[in-house]
Length: 99
Image (cartoon, rainbow, N blue to C red; front, side, top):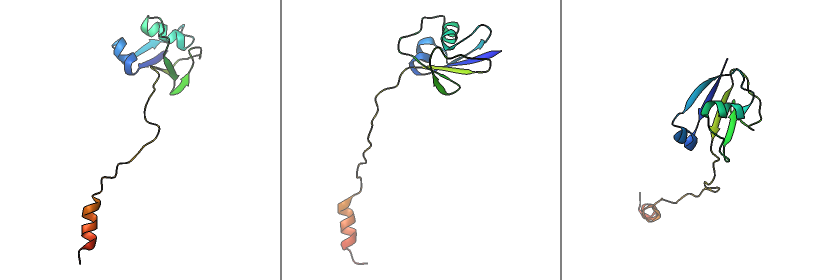
């Protein structure tokens, strides 16, 4: 009976480990997984997933589950722009030249 626990981004860096495998006996929920895997109090801003689906810390876990812990991700660009890198002068010169 085991649960695979994965740590990502700053959580992994802080803990100094990427993955642990826990004995699932006595582990009831995601909060228990964090406590058993780290021995630390849970950070206020921490997210979890069970089997690749976002999960709350009260979500039950069972043998064979994979539980991941990661920080919230923010920022990023909501719109994308493209930069015109085409040399329009060269294109116009080529269009003016006879074949």
